[in-house]
Structure formats: C-alpha cells, structure tokens
Image (cartoon, rainbow, N blue to C red; front, side):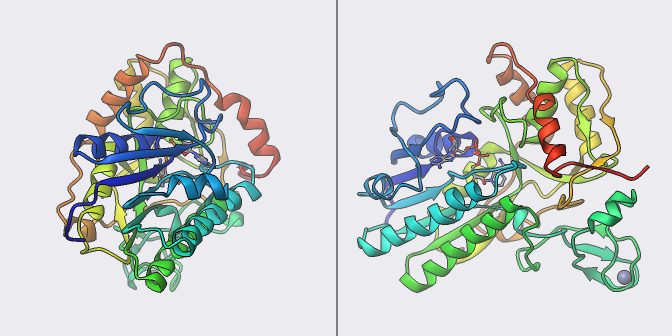
Length: 376
Ligand SMILES: NC(=O)c1ccc[n+]([C@@H]2O[C@H](COP(=O)([O-])OP(=O)(O)OC[C@H]3O[C@@H](n4cnc5c(N)ncnc54)[C@H](O)[C@@H]3O)[C@@H](O)[C@H]2O)c1
Ligand SMILES: [Zn+2]
C-alpha cells in the first residue's frame, strides 16, 4: 500500500486492544469508526469513558449483516478486534461471533466490492498447541497437548513427542504446526484462516496478528474468565489469594497493550508482511507463580497465591512467541512487565471499588469440566 490509508474501522474498538489501536490511529491522523456492542461481560457499567471522542462510535454486533455492511462503508483498513474470548463455557456463541462474524464480514466486503485495502485480524497465540520445545536428545520438537489423564495424574511437564523425555520451552515461530485446543482457540484458527484465505482469493492484503497474552489499562475488571493479570489484581484487592492452576510453573508471554497497538499500525502501513500470520508479544516467559508475586508486591498486599490441585484441560504449559518476523518491520516491545503492571495498577486505582467475580464463576467452571481436580 503506497499511499497512507486514512479511514479505519476498528471492531471491538471499546475493548482493551481495540481502544488503544483507536487512540493510536486518531493520533496519527486517521478517521476512525468503532463498531462494538459493549458486551456486558466486559463492559458492566456500559459505555466506557475511554472511547476516543474523535472516533465515530457505533453500538452493534459484528454478526449482524446490515450493521456490518453499514460499518464497512468508506473504509480503507479494517482492524478486526471484536471477539468473544476467554475460558467461557459457551460453545455456539464463539462460533457465531468469531467464526461466522468474520466469514460474513469478508463476504460483505467481497460481494459489495467495497474499497477495503487491508484487513488486519486479531488472531492469538492460542492457535498453537504447546509451544516449540527443545529435547536434549531430539533437539527442536513440537510437543502435542498434554493429555488430560497426564494432568489428572499430577504430571505437568511437556514431554518430547519422540522419546518422552521432559522438554524445555523455546520461542515458537509462526511455522509451528497449529492446534487450537479450546473452543475459543478453534475460532481464532477459523478467523485467521478465513481472513488469509480470502485475501489470497480476492487479492486484498491481509495480516493475522497472533497476539500473546495482552494486558494494560482498560482491561476489563469484570470478566472472571480471561486476563490473568486482571483476575489476580481483583483477587488481591479483595484480600483473596490468586488461584493458580497446576503448580503455577506454566509460563506466559505477557505483552503490554500499547505494544500490540504499535504492531497493528506497523502491519497496516507496510506490505512486507501481507498474507502472513505474524506473532506479536514480548518474546519473554513469565511463570504464573512469579506473576502473582510481582502483582502482590506492586499492590503492597502480601498474600501468596494458592494452588488447590486443579488443572484446565487444554491449557498450554509454555508458549513464548518468537517475534523475529514482526521485528523485520521495526516492532520492538517497549514496556517491561514491571512497568506495565504498575501502569495497570495505577489505572485500576482510578476505577473505584473493585469486586472479585472469580469466586462466583468458579463453581460453574468446575461443573462444566473447564476446571478439573488432580487425582489425590
Ligand atoms: N487480550 C488478550 O490477551 C488477547 C490475546 C490474543 C488475542 N486477543 C484477541 O484480541 C481481540 C481484542 O481482545 P481484547 O483483549 O481487547 O478483548 P476485550 O474484551 O477487551 O475487547 C473486545 C471488544 O469486542 C467487543 N465485542 C465482543 N463481542 C462483540 C460482538 N459480537 N460485536 C461487536 N463487538 C463485540 C466487546 O464489547 C469489547 O469491547 C480479540 O479478538 C481477542 O480474541 C486478545
Ligand atoms: Zn526427545
């Protein structure tokens, strides 16, 4: 794309990542339209104050044909962030919002010959299975998901698919075979593949950004099913211990939301990564137990996390993004974890009383088998 595009549609532009993309676009002189239904799970108090006043805001669902057709009018670049996310018990809703919503959006652009010049879709590192790993005998391997029976027996290690020895985690490049081990992840695979495939068929440039675990100001404090940092903060602020699954040794690649927004702007304004899935993250591992410690320290609340002998089937043990590909267009994670958590906590302090929704959600998660017990 030679001329800088100027009109953007950001679906999910009221949410964590979308709203930061909107701010960045507005700052750089784009005209921005937001389509967001203010999903009650995420936006318990209705329309959030941070929606950029320079952007046009439309409240509606992405899976409604006419709403989407109208939102796509006179748009150069679509940043498709709206999605149903997290470890929620629903199945059909994920498929409807994420898979169907994306497929229909692409059909609308194609069938109405809309002059969209690029679609950037929010994918996720959840499209992988276990991350890449190193085995002392077999070298670079791609282990399979750990079977539920193994976790139930209290063995959390990732074993080599060839020799069965425990492996160590290494950064996962985009070429790693995919997985999709939860309903959410499956619909992220759908979204990414639909967009990239459609791009090849129509010749319209596309990029699928595989975000790692994203956090930062505006991350919903109401959703007990997603966002480990938000959940740990709300637990601690209510003087409750953060709950750790397995032994807390699982690692996450935690990325500050402004870095994710930066990545979106970069891929939208170059053609170098068109047609590709692209990892975005910090490239660094942090264990869940370590994370609980960092948050407790920053909040000044000395409560240790508890591990109650539970696990979540489908949970990935170690997934660190290899960010070499996006580095080739100038991306660099700029906010270290401690600083980012500090900024999130500063924001939480402006949000009034914070409730713990996790405790209420727990029984349902156990009942539906999303959280299970390790055998005694
Ligand atoms: N936060 C992460 O760690 C992470 C990691 C990987 C991928 N992603 C992806 O990034 C995108 C943005 O995630 P986020 O963290 O900003 O989540 P978020 O929940 O903060 O934002 C999503 C926004 O989409 C809106 N939305 C939900 N369903 C909608 C619908 N049917 N129609 C219109 N709007 C709808 C919500 O109201 C919300 O404002 C999602 O596609 C998500 O799957 C997020
Ligand atoms: Zn091996």
